[in-house]
Image 1 (cartoon, one colour):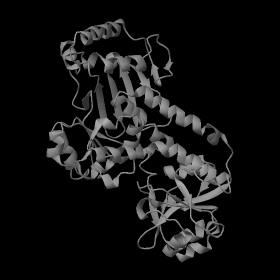
Image 2: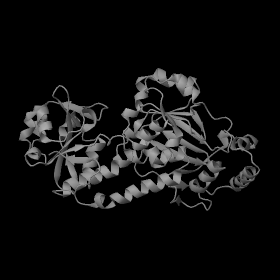
Image 3: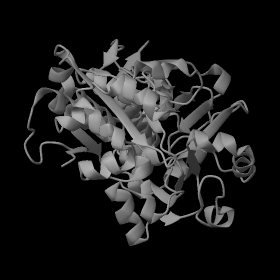
Image 4: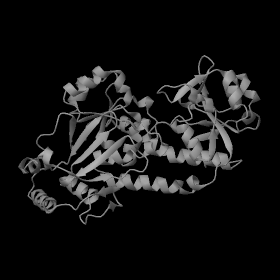
Length: 411
């Protein structure tokens, strides 16, 4: 009952209004009377002690070809997924360049005649194998790490606190990385969904094997969102999957409101480079169209080096020789060292040990060099806080201790 009632209550407006502010769903027509009757029937079944599966089995299955969407989720920034809402609480997720997923409420039967091109996800989804690390923070934010029982990342590889705690408690266990999952363990756990990153495309045989084992595979594409806040908006997709649409909507709205002041301010006029030094002495930088470069822009800064866009491929980063980086970023107001690959730095001496040429940079001379925390890239819900951090660094000479979430100054 809860799956149906939640979707009907937050997904489609019975009055036929244009937009439901609680759920972010735009409706095209009023819900029909049959939906209300259906809800009453399930209430009675619950009171009689029948399970959701019993209720679903006694409900006549709708015919897919006769079903029409009643509304769609109104997305602000995300472009890599859509959600259409159907009568009875059914929701159709479409992920760009991946596929379509029909989310079936726990109390409803699978519609007849669903084409093979649509993957059916029958709720509850409570034995999920998660190989897409960026999704965990969003799922944790809506309080649904309990639905993730299998991890594609070892405990030592997690920086999301909820994931580390779940692995310590034994409620989340390692089931092999995305390229070599433990199929026996996944089957024994009763896995009902595998959430993969786009890395799965490099091992298509794994995706095929999971499908043959009747385990639905959803490929998470938040990393392909062009707007930084589009990545965070994927929390609304996980709200659909795990019956937390209202909470997801509220959390996303709260984060947007926290950024209102920053996004409306005039640029600070500061330039910033975001980089790390590779093992062979090259400089790895983000391309100007990358989401990190865009966060710098949203925070009021200007990203350098701009010439990084000259290398045309699908990657969001590129390597350049130190001499080239020197020429383009020597006069940058701020340097930000990316700790994700190389580990966190604490001092300028550690930075200069990687490349003495950096001593000539304006930001090094003025002590305006910062380093990210290693948790930044796993904590997708923290993107708003990262923008606030960048804005603070651009606007204040000496940020107060504890004011920043993901950046610390090199001493």
